Length: 238
Image 1: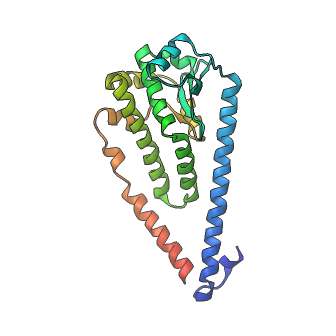
Image 2: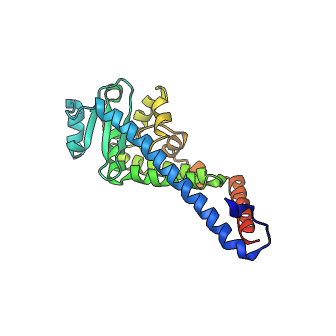
Image 3: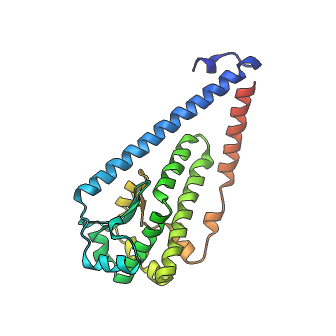
């Protein structure tokens, strides 16, 4: 930090300033990584404590139809409806009793198809990396917007996979059922590197054929981010 207090307009201090900025970014990256990792581990530990590897017959039937490895699916006997994918190198799917009771058989198939895509693509690991990068460059307004766009795009691709399995109407019906439920799980998932079957306005719009909100980035956030980068560059070079 001392080099940040050195007098300006001295070219010999450019390297020291650059090293200071890199060090601060590296420390912030490590802190963001371990915080996200710790939150995710705590969340998954609580799930495993209550989880059952023996699947109900309804769930087992859908798993067999989708040709999903049963060992990669766990069942949680809780009334809150959710399905999610967790795990970085050997991802698994977790399904709750609440979601099983809420959805029809075909809608349950849509939810599991969605999470199976996340599992095959190792999306929890990608979410972890994207989240850490977003927190590393927190000083750039566009950083969070890019991360939101990245996560939404992952959900869109998983939705497309589910549509191939059961059709758009069935997936839309499953999402509609979830609209009536409290968003407590979604709020919790936003703090972890876990991918959940949750509803967002962008996903609903995409199902209706409108991707305009996803394709556009805020001019204000882009301009402010560019201004911050220019200011940082001037600080280092002068």
